[in-house]
Length: 262
Image (cartoon, rainbow, N blue to C red; front, side):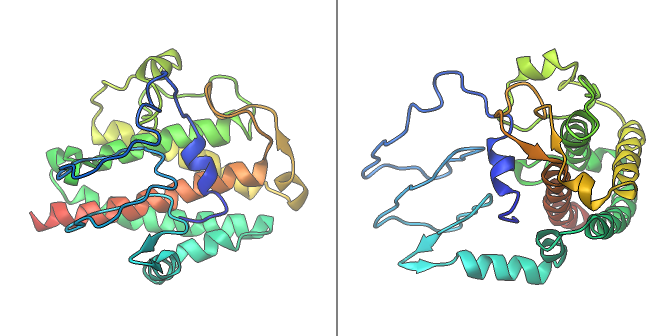
């Protein structure tokens, strides 16, 4: 994940119900955590000593990640950059032209991937590979990301959220419902693709009209209620949209390979 935009991703939509710090500073000694699953957790400064880590899968914003006294952060970043060169393009964005070129890359990659997904049966596009979002759910989440980080922030629309959007896991369902989002909806792939195409066209319109001065403009709205109140430039907001597009494309391609193999 690009370090430039990572902090936005993990702080955005954080919902504190008073219980999510119950394990802060906890000490697990000779404990059996086999099969445990941690989702949207802050695991900063976690220390694991003399433990068995076999078939462990870690994904997320990684920094200063030390395994057996070896910081593997740079290795992981370099390997991800090799496999997904769009990550480098994302980090190096500076000018309005760079943002347009980045969106060109995103459109091209998603076009190829959607074509792969269309070759699958409709039910397969709803299957969760490894308990991750299905292909349809991933597209619905990107609809929400566009609504939150482009329509609401960059375009200053007060309530742009489409009912078929899917918020991040940490966003409380009641808060999503207050935005008019129906997390229990079961739209068809075609319905989702219609909304998705509209949102992608919206971002295309923004980047096509973007200027270097416009990149620095400070947005007046937070992406959604519950997001941290902080100054965000147009460039920062579009950067989050594009990082989410790149990261979720990576997940989607990974999971499509699993579904195709089946």
